Image 1 (cartoon, protein in one colour):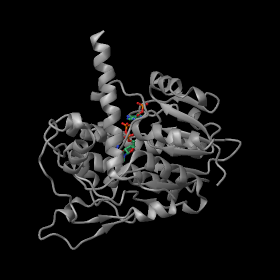
Image 2: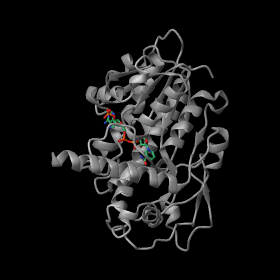
Image 3: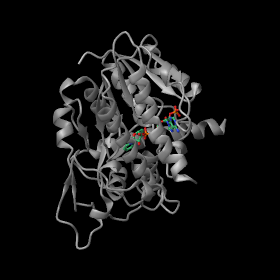
Image 4: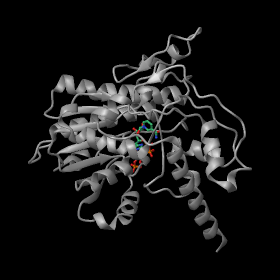
Length: 348
Ligand SMILES: NC(=O)c1ccc[n+]([C@@H]2O[C@H](COP(=O)([O-])OP(=O)(O)OC[C@H]3O[C@@H](n4cnc5c(N)ncnc54)[C@H](OP(=O)(O)O)[C@@H]3O)[C@@H](O)[C@H]2O)c1
C-alpha cells in the first residue's frame, strides 16, 4: 500500500522510537507526536541524518487531548502507540483507563476529520496481549485444557471490574488496553472512516532502547524488570511467559501499515521461545562475567500451560523473531554502558 508520510504517537517511548527508526530506514517521512518538545528535540538530535524526513509536533496529555488536528495534517498513515504503561498509580480509572480510551478516540476523530491532500489510509494500533488474555481461564484448577490464544480472543474483563477502586494497577492496565482497543474497532464499525485498522497485541516487549532515557534507573517498565535481574534483585515472577524483541515488534508495525491485505486484522506477535526471569538470569550470568556473582541463582520454571499464536503475525507481517539470548544480551550490555557513563559523569 502506498503510504509515505506517517504520524507516530508515543514516538519518544520505548516501542514508538523503534518504530520511528524502522520507518525512517524504509525511506518514509515521519512525524512524531509528543507532549514534551524536549524529548522530541532529543530524538531529532540523535538522528541528524534524518533531519529532512523526521519532525516532531507537540500534543496534549490524553487526560484532555489536544493538538491532534495539527498532528494528522498531511500524513497518509498513523501508528498510534502512545498509551500509559505504568503500575505506579493512585487512581486507576482517571490515570490509566480514561486517558487510554481518550487517546484512541482523539486520534481516530482527528484522522477522520482531516482534510489532507492524500487521504489517511490506515491506522495501526499498538494494543497488548493484556487485551487478549483471560486471566481467570488461566487460573482455573484443575488447569484448563491446553489453549492457544490468537488475535480472535478478547480479555473478558468488564469496565466496572477494571475501574473499581480496589482493583490493582495491573488489572486496570489490562482494562485500559482492552477498552482503548475496543473504542478503536467500534469507531471503524460505527463511523466507517476512509481508513482501516490493524491492531497488534504484543506481550512483554524487551530489548535495547533508542528513545531518550535519562538514567538506567528510568528504563521503561518492561526493560526495568530485566535490569532488576541483572542488578541482583530477587527474581520477579513473569505474569505471562510470552515476549517479543522491540526491534521485531517495530518491523511488525511497519509491515502492518504497508501491507494492504492485512487491513482489518488483529495479531498477537510473540516470539516462539518462552521466557522466565530465571532464564534471563541464566543468560546474563553466561554472557556477563562481571555479573556472575551478583545475579540470583534461583531457578524458575517456564510456564508451558497455555500458548500464544505468534506464527500468524510472523508469516502475514513477514518478519523474523529474535531469540531471547540476543534480546537480553543487547539490553543488558546497553544498560551497563549507560551505568558506566553515569558513574563516570558523577565522578567528575
Ligand atoms: N513495553 C511493553 O512491554 C508493552 C507490551 C505490550 C504493549 N505495549 C504497549 O505499547 C505502547 C508503548 O509502550 P512503551 O513500552 O513504548 O511505553 P513508553 O515507553 O512509556 O512510551 C509511551 C509513550 O506514550 C506517550 N504517553 C504516555 N502517557 C501519555 C498520556 N497520558 N498522554 C499522551 N501521551 C502519553 C509518551 O510520550 P510523551 O511523553 O513523549 O508524550 C510515551 O513516550 C503502549 O500502548 C503499551 O500499552 C507495551
